[in-house]
Length: 269
Image (cartoon, rainbow, N blue to C red; front, side):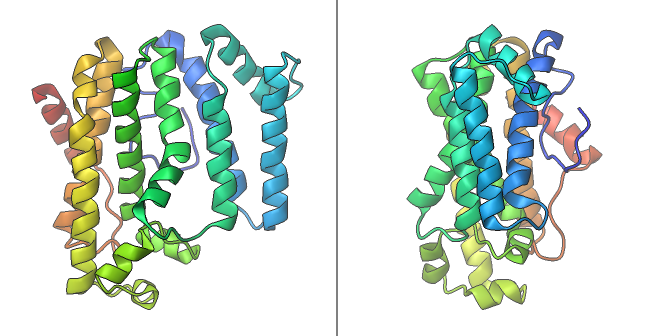
């Protein structure tokens, strides 16, 4: 689908069954636009929170079965009704976006992981719901994959986030490896920063690899889509390593050569 933002991983790829494309587009439109309300433009924090509160009110109206005048929410309501999707994942996304408005640091990894639980994991749960593949093991591994992807994105975007006065690495990790905020501002890549990034990369990789068997358990197209997502995330981590952890001067991204390798690795899983 056409989007105004770069995406590392497929949102509605050719592997997605055509019958599910409208549903995925409706979910993506909600999540992308709500995220933009929290992050983009020059609105004041109070204005951002008010806009997100309006999204929350629309979800409340959907829960009550009320007709939605806004086309985006009308499409979303139809998808929720058709596939009997839970509403909590949508509320969780809004909770994370509201947190973005007022929170720019995370003291430790559990707090950062809780943010991922609400900002990333709901998308995986909704996809499992669309495919009728929700069970305890699948949700557990989906949560781990989604959180790992979010962490990988944070590692890619250290410089971008710092420009927004945000740090999405645990502050106690920075302290342990003796990396200061001033060092992030000056884009200094020294032994301390590389040690910090090595630790963060290895943790994200371990999370992804531990949950990767989900891609083999899920049948058909969703399994192949997830294989590509897993291998894409792992390839980004390799790109960060190959750049000597210098994510300031060149943001690691996937090119055509990378996708060929990702496809080969997905086939061999």
